[in-house]
Amino acid sequence: MKIIDIVVPAYNEVESIPAFHKEVQAVAETLPDYRFEYIFVDDGSSDGTRELLCKMAAADDCIKYISFSRNFGKEAAIHAGLSHAYGDMVILMDADLQHPPALIPEMVRTVDIEGYGACGAKRHPKLSSRMFAGLNNKMSSVKLQKGATDYMCMSRAFVDAVLKLAETQRFTKGLFAWVGFKVKWLDYVQNPREHGKSRWSLRKLFLYATDGLTAFSVVPLRLLTIIGAIVSLLAFIYIIVTLVKTIICGIDVPGYVTTLCAVLFLGGIILLGMGILGDYIGRIYLESKKRPLYILEETNIEKPDEQGKR
Ligand code: UDP
Ligand code: MG
Image 1 (tube, rainbow, N blue to C red):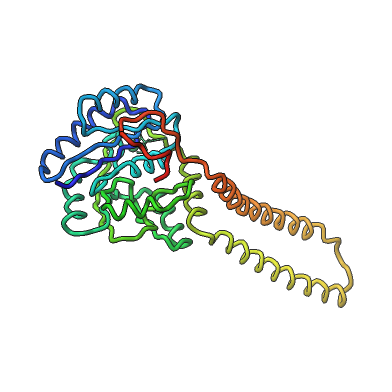
Image 2 (image 1 turned 180 degrees about the vertical axis):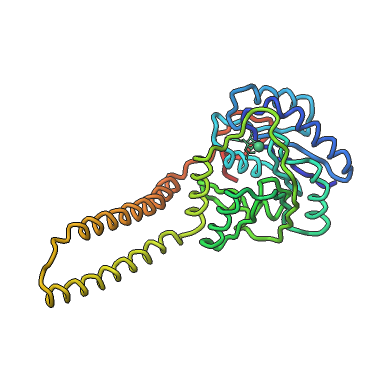
């Protein structure tokens, strides 16, 4: 019997988890050829999620949980879940039931019978998501699917490939695209969240998007070189023109405005360039520390892998 691991990152989801488990279990029972196991990753919740998971795990040996010492973020939780999943397939789902469990049978069929590397769910992309994916796909060789979510059923090979990517700053959507494989996308309509609130603000989305760009592409650096080249060329032409004009007509006006414009414009470009450079240097700095992705505080998995390493 093939085993399917359901990996669920959960941050303060004590209200959602019982309903989530019930609904997914109802779908799982329609697939008697597979054994479903749950790996809940409590990402440092403070609302009793850990205690709930501990209780649920004691009552049902298909339920495993991992609990972090603090909130390390969803990307770390996903990595922890994936690296503790030993099933033939892994399904990654949010705990808030925004990812409809009804898609599971088709996802499993796509991966197990049709032989796809993974089957993901995508929803109608919001403007921000379309813009981000469009910009990313222009700049990076890793192409993102518009409207793609983390709700995905992955084959063993896909999971192993994702786990081979050892970077500590993980942009999961990009990693999933980077590993390649044939991926089928199912459309779905997202339910609103019933309990708690979403962690996304506009500011976080912006940071996430720039993170995604710098994580997978050095095109911003190349753009800087190009902008620098264009500005130098324009400046050079302007210098020649001004020189010729000065020689022919003599010096007419003091040139206060042109000087000011040039200084401000170049100042802006230099600062922008420093910002972009700084972004990459910051990434190198963080990556070079080689800190573990998370600290595992409690789990019912017998031999949990050593903190984030496999
Ligand atoms: N989550 C997490 N760690 C965090 C934030 C969120 O593990 O720091 C989990 C959360 O419990 C949920 C999933 O990630 O299961 C998606 O989070 P959310 O619903 O807030 O995001 P959205 O659906 O708005 O993208
Ligand atoms: Mg959600």
